[in-house]
Structure formats: C-alpha cells, structure tokens
Length: 108
Image (cartoon, rainbow, N blue to C red):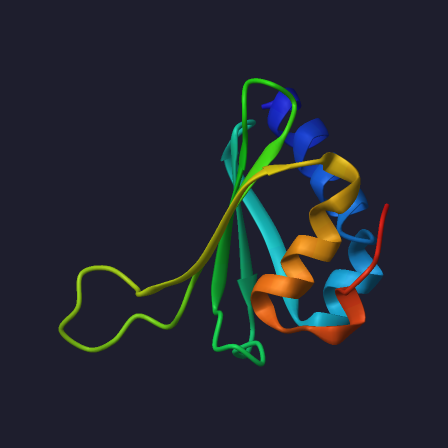
C-alpha cells in the first residue's frame, strides 16, 4: 500500500495540503494508486458531496463530481466531470466543478 500512500500524499499536496482540505471540509481516501475519493462533510456550493480523482496513463488526471445519494437510488447523480487535467491545475479544476471559491486559480 506504499504506492497508494505516496500517490495520496501527492494528490493532497496538489489540492493545497491537509490544511486547505480541512478548510473546505474535505478528506481524501484511496484503495489503489489510480483512484482517489474526496468526500465533503457538507455539500459544496454546487451540491457536490464527493469527487473521484483518477490518474490517467499519460500523467494527467480526471475528476468526476457527485451529489448526495438520494433515498431509493443506487448511485449518486453526476454533477460534473473533467479529463486531461494537468497536475498543477487540480485545485483550480476542483474549485470550478464544486464552486468553492477558495480553490479557484490555485496551482500547487
């Protein structure tokens, strides 16, 4: 699981670090080095409750945002998606997809 830990640390760093994630109420978890889950304690301005960040084979990232899981539903509604994200733009794209202003125009 060392690969997962190192990759997870890199994602956290690119999103501004533990302090920045704490400010927006987010926490990262991972089961493998190619998929990371970012969960929010409360909905973002655009209603996003969770984000899946994927590592693409070319060193870029993908990001899919989901809303809350509604009663009787098997899957949360997809609220936004981006692919081909440069590593230094992860925080900016997360800010754009979630509406979290403190992340807009951040490059880490």
